[in-house]
Length: 94
Image 1 (cartoon, helix red, strand yellow):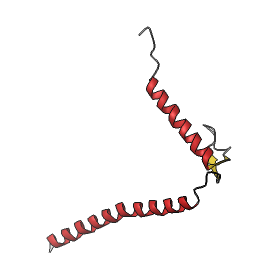
Image 2 (cartoon, one colour):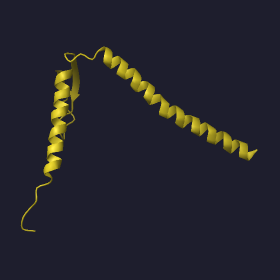
Image 3 (cartoon, one colour):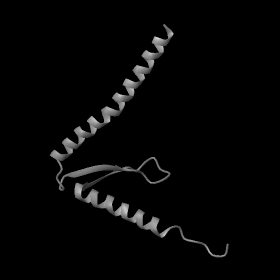
């Protein structure tokens, strides 16, 4: 009796894991399908900008086209990569 209960719990857990890993793939596919329909570089996308550090006030809405957001993301990625390649500055005298 106890062994069958343990088996049922294990099977239920495996099914839950399978569903959890399968669900995001389907959700991503749906998002990609929706994005491909409206994948226009001139589509305006608005985001809320975080307030200044130490402040709870001052959020503002920033709007750019999809192409501009993509370019800003690429520029930021390249800046990070360049900084990583240069490394941290060394201090002399230690």
